Length: 113
Length: 112
Image (cartoon, each protein chain N blue to C red):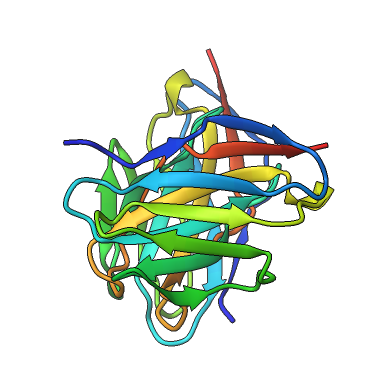
């Protein structure tokens, strides 16, 4: 049973660039949520995708955008990168937009120089 | 919005010692409650959950009881191992946002 997978594992970008992170949900899951975890902090909710639409959004600027594909995989895009965007980006999947049990992937470590 | 307060770490214990990590939260209604664990360099793993008052979640020797009156969900283990060294996160489910709200985490270090 395949768990949540994310790519790439690590990424280094410079300020002002754009980045795309990818996530494949756990087998059988149809909902993907993204979280940002700054160093030494707990994860913060960015947004949730279900049925290829953004359903809920946390307190993040619109530089952060996403997409969900028909196979339920998802992308997180961040434009105009800032130093403060350096973090571990975690993808979580679940079955249904209202389901409270989420399973996390290993994360993508983004470093902005 | 929801918020979580966890005891500050690091918590340093000797192998086979008893563990308690305190967690209190504020939330609307009576949300499901979760503990997640993060090993060094990894993502989050679901450790246990409880969905209603007085429920006890348990897994791998860890337990936590949903205390509605005190809005608490303390994590306990009777005998810790070196392999339990990790960061532990308490998280209530925010039904409005359909997302987890995490505390800052508590680092546990178990020494042989």
